[in-house]
Length: 295
Length: 182
Image 1 (cartoon, rainbow over the protein chains, first blue to last red):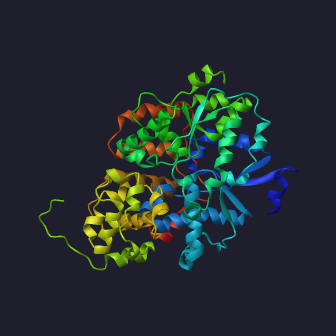
Image 2: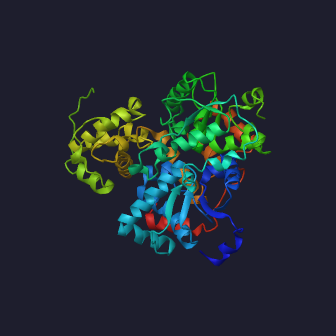
Image 3: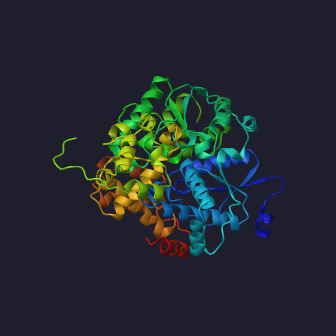
């Protein structure tokens, strides 16, 4: 840890270094905002990885896997230089890309040489890439209980993990099963009801929602149909792209608002900015929130 | 499949894909688990397991000109299912790369344009400039008019930045392009 960094940490707070990813700086900035709010509740000091760059998302590995590895690799080099031990990644897609790059760099000498050529620093592989949920342990959801000032009773949520987050641990390095009951408990602690359903890990169409919207329509319809059958009135998600796709795509007339999971904590804690977040949704959640006297 | 020409087989194709993707296609025994889990399977012209079979057989042109390779979004459903540990998304990555290198007739130009425009933004700024990306991509490909109200809503509610986010050390992106020859 460098000296400059040490000075900025307030006493008694745990320092968390995050990799936000491009969408959290623009189309999903409310996700970032509400997540930081939650981190504050948990007594964490959140810092961004300085000068991070795009992980390459789907396009980079789709047309040039080597470029994708080196692009994500720059973030690992930066983390290494900045003395970060655990890099917490918010977006599930970025998480997979960084993890993949780490894996490739660990096994490929040539790739490490190329990384050195590009950025002039030797890669050591010490930085651990983690999904943001790993900043807390299962059971820690109790921390947030004390901050819930108002009940979200009336919200019937289905939790949509999306594809990448719910894959087995041997594939992604993150074990959702370990956290699943904790996530459900967290949502129930806000007063909302969690509905069981079968589409929690179906793919939303990812980037094809932009280039081939009609294909994504069909996938999203299937997910939202399942949600409506489960008698849900909102969807809770973890992924910035899933959130946009589920609100923008699909042909159904009856739309469900799709919340980021930390937004629920914002609503329940009576956060002043929560109304601003709600108003930025493509599917207006205000009628639902007003009827249930949440906002 | 209606065809008048004979299928051309390229003997070294499987080895080429194996070497570049690091996947062992010999171990595939066509159990079809990958296709069963694939969310895009019903839209594809060849199922994922068929693509593997075609790679094994060396049907290079058919594989590279298929829709399937562009419809794979890398959701990892197949990887979770495969009993032989083949990573199909990595195979698809390699196939797409070969298709672009050999300049075959790509079945899904819209998807290719998406990837290239996205990377263009990253090469320029080091991060994705969503507004610029959407505007440019929509101009290149057929405009999906139905999305314009959504983009407007994004823009006016402040969910899109007007100016691009840039990294400070943009020279890194230049060096990266040199190293990767892109």
